[in-house]
Image (tube, rainbow over all chains, first blue to last red; front, top):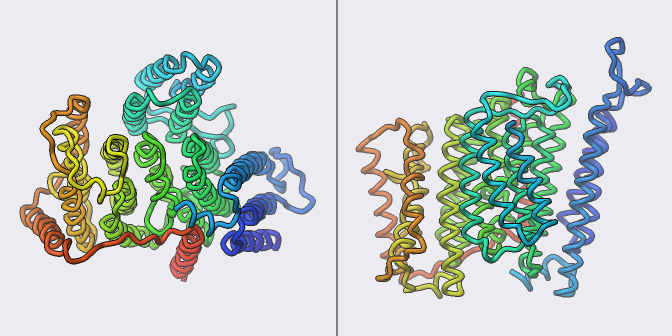
Length: 109
Length: 475
């Protein structure tokens, strides 16, 4: 339970950074923190002390392996999204010479 | 067999990229393949790859409702592509076909995680399509959309994790029997509403729809924005009574406010974008009151909104502007002019529009009819801007065939109440007269409430309100 609360705490730290940081790259770093907290949350749901991670009919106490396989997908998608966002930020900063969100908004919108 | 409707376009997408000279032939084969696979697939049926139990496996489900939605979507998608295919290259075709394939399997998915993967896939393709021409504005709107979408889907995942810790399954149908952990509904619904384009939460929507290249706003407004609402429609039986009520009232407030913002816009595509927000709110109201009508809403709104954006794109291309002040007194050919105002009226909620027929079957607070007054105002605003020319507009003749079909879609048994219709028309003409009286005296200016940071703050504020509602419902 403590890991779950910790992961939610990290989630809100990431969210806070995402709102308060002015620089686009720092926002993306905070988004990475937020995504990691989701992964930690799922791991903490599945984790049960020393219990094995294999489901068989004769073992009732086990760490859920299903959620770990799903997490691989979450990590890959998160990585792809973050990479694409960084590429877009790079193209944008090459064109309008700034990473600061308010300046980008002022120049573009 | 029904999964071929998803596998086929994705395979054709890869082939169209390899043999790029023939990409238009592959898209034709793809649509024929989708149509055949949808038509010959028996209903209802479900499929779990690998023969896992439904509690651990990924379930795909196919019934008549999904069949009709997907066939309509196929025609809609083909219609939009055919309209703009001359200007699109093989890279666009690749993304377009993958988008079609992933949307098809999204509608068949019946578990939380598979839905998450599909929404991510659809979103990533939309980001790439939006920023395809590497224009600074489009890259920025795509980046903004991407960041908000990531936050939304992380909310969704946290909620799904909470559900899973309680139920031990990700299957939506199997989850129905279990109790709902505190705050899980708040996270899931907030995430989905950010993706759905409702007012307050979807700061990415107005700029994404107004700045996207031709054809893209049609598909965004027509189908992509509805995927969040579709998931809410699927999980609606899971939600508690208090949450359902909250969604109904949020839908009403959001519909009225987005209508006011629609009226304030001076950019034609932004005006339509805000009216999409109104429609999404109506979608939420329909789900909250009569969920069985949601697929009907999805189909008629897909065509109405898609064609409206298509006509707006054409006006932008022809007159080089989407600013209503610059478009003042421009003359439009007879057919597109009539179709534009019929479809605009169709989403306004006045008799005999599609929205009226759906609304008449719902028991909802009367305050929602304020929207008709505001609709009367922006309908007149557009009516005064455009003028009809003597040209017939043969290019748009096909729309004359499509529009009656759209109007027929909601041919459901509805209550024909003379008093209600009279009252609605009084409100509508009240809006028209009010606009005519004040438009010369007061200059309305659009207000931008969706700066990047503000949009995120609205989302957090909504999440906190949802937390309070969910906590109170437990006391």
